[in-house]
Image (cartoon, rainbow, N blue to C red):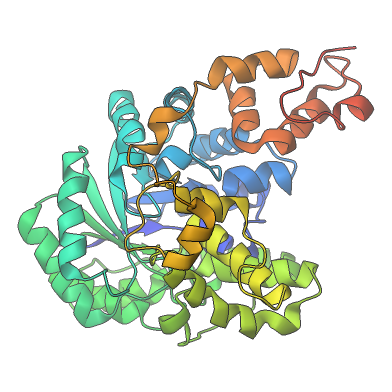
Amino acid sequence: MRKVCFVDTTMRDAHQSLLATRVTTSELAKIAPLVDQVGYHAVEVWGGATFDSCVRYLDEDPWERLDVLKEKFKKTKLQMLLRGQNLLGYRNYADDVVELFVKTMSKHGIDVVRIFDALNDFRNLEQSAKAIKASGMHLQVAMSYTTSPVHNIDYFVEISDAAVELGADSLCIKDMAGLLKPGTATTLVNEIKKRHPIPLEVHSHFTTGIADMTYLKSAEAGADILDTATSSMGFGTSQPGVESIWTALHDVGLADRPDYPLLKEINDYFAGVRRNHSGTDAGFTINTSVLENQIPGGMYSNLINQLKSQNMSDKFEEVLDEVPRVRADLGYPPLVTPTSQIVGVQAVLNVMNKERYKTITKEVERYIKGFYGSPPAEIEKSLKSRVMGVEESISHRPGDTLDLEVEKGRSELGLLAQNDEDLLIYLLLGEVGKKFLAQRYQNSLRVDFDVAKDFKEGITVYPV
């Protein structure tokens, strides 16, 4: 009988969703050899917000994290999440940056790359897909799942065709906010599997409390792989717990019997890790209102922390109400990085200013102008007119008009670009990356950090 496989997300999406991506490399490395024994199809260890968080908050090199975990996982494939032309940053990068980044992450041991575009505009995946295939890694193309007047079964089946045309080795239904319902999942999985006999993975979050039922129905309908996390780092805005999902699938003959003692040891370890990060724990259980506001796990925890930092925690419910209104105005983009940040920040500003669109962020303007791709539906007319005037949004692939960045960045960094890894930290994270590198090399290169920390974008750091 067909058996369903599992991907463990504990080391990436789980703590991104629950703990604002603050789990350290050493915390992950200690338990990695045990996780390697479980028999997962793959472990998701990198990508998403980890690249930024390592540098910005943890003072860690994200490339070194990958090296450490690659050494620990002797049997299990390493998987990551890549945002197409956005890579692991928050804007579209030039094609030469995409190519260099993909080559470099392949060199550091990534086996499976899940790529997606927030708008399901697969023009934004063309360059990364090509580079991934050329590097010999497994290409998984994800469809960002959401619901709206334009997002229906036919829509997702149609874009699955486009994903296969990109050269996908496998497909993924990426349900960021836990919106995929069991009955819909049955139909969607059936339709996709009928058209495309390649592995299909289902990724969801427990935010709305229905993901475990959705997983069961997806597996019964033909899904090959499910994303889960160890229970102490699961549920809430994270993925369903692996122990319960594995047990349920074993009971219906779709999985072998799990190794409960091994899973318990891993679960107990991560329970301690979670206690260590209680200060950033979103403390979220289940909220069925997410079926309406559609806020995904990572966005939810980050909104909470953002409002706390602005002393606006009392405005949280207002922001939750404003998010779907902004989303509708912008043509119903799926709420996933970077569109979740674009919509979220604008919603916070609308509430803070007590007037909608009194201030429009630069990223909302760029979105409306088409620099992130084509929105799923029409943008609200008065908002679009205010931003565009008589201009038209761009219609070409957004990456086509971007100037090459690699050599320019290398020139700007000077001796701080000791290797391609350093250069990519700067190219993706800008001044934050430059300060990180200056601090790292201030002794070996005799960089005056007191001077370097004041440098702005485009200014070269020279050794003293």
